[in-house]
Each structure stands twice: as structure tokens, then as C-alpha cells.
Length: 195
Image 1 (spheres, helix red, strand yellow):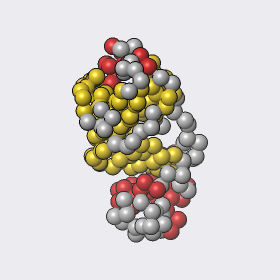
Image 2 (cartoon, rainbow, N blue to C red):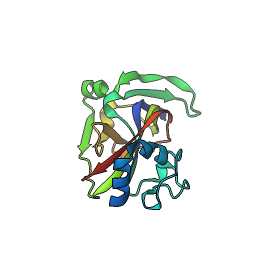
Image 3 (cartoon, rainbow, N blue to C red):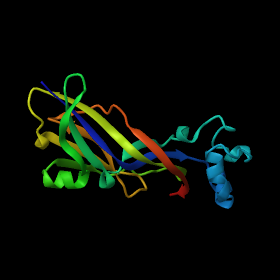
């Protein structure tokens, strides 16, 4: 048997979209400097009709009644594919720290791009926590040596962003489980939006 780990890292983040009332939209449109402080629970001195955090009981990552995504940006990602023994001890790298987009092009890796969904709510906030680090950690057990041509990467366009989010990774037709990543927050942006 052969054992492999796929690591994908780079830049990305966690994004939440949350619908709000017209009154809340108008309040924060006039008091925009308070929006980020309120979302981060640094200032909950807002009128009840504009309170998005239930007086501080909700954190920013719970404001996601439209959508919530955690992703690595395909266009800034790098990939490492490591072979290990059955106990997880490294034997060597099949691929070592290559730019993902270049790796895909040079190895004719199949990709599938999906369009972003459209937000229909009239008023909403977008909360984006920019992060950097490792986003994907997948294990493969195979009776054959690693075959790059069996990889497939599903990329979804992000709502209101230019990023291409790595949504899933398949090997030989099997959707690989992501064992999680290890990222560091680099900052939070909050946007007030209307359709």
C-alpha cells in the first residue's frame, strides 16, 4: 500500500453573508464607522433595530444566515504532495511547494469551475476574515503509486469576491476529506451592501 498527504495552503479566509433589515442598513450607512466595531462586539451601543449581534451574544462568524464559506484562494495557493509510511512518517515529496495553478497547468490536472450563487436579499453585510496558512490536509491510501492525472480540483467563484475558492479535491473520482488546516488571521473587512 501507498500513503500520501496532500497539503494546499496560501491565502484565503472565512466569509459570512448576513441579511439585515432596511432600518439596520440605513443606520449603519449613516454610521459606517460603527459597523465593524459592532460586528466584532467592540461597540454594542446601537439601537435595538440595528443590533446584529443580539447585544453581543453572537460573534461575527455566527452572522451567516445567507452563507458561510472557508476557503483557500486557488490563484494564490501552493501544493505539496508527501508520501508517508503507514504510520505517517515522511518518505519524501512527490510534489514540493509548487504554485497550484502552475502545477495544474503543467500536469494537465482536471479542474471544474462553478459560478457563484447570487444573493437575493435586499440588504446584507459581508464579513471577510483574511487568513494565511494551510487550508487543505487530505490523506490518500492506494495500492498504486501516486498518479497526478487522477487529481481533480473543484473551484467555486466567491460571492462578491474575485477569488476562486477551492471547494473540493478528488483523487480517482473520490472526494477527499479535508482534515482541516492551520491558518492565521490577517484582518477583518466588513461591507454593507444592497441589491
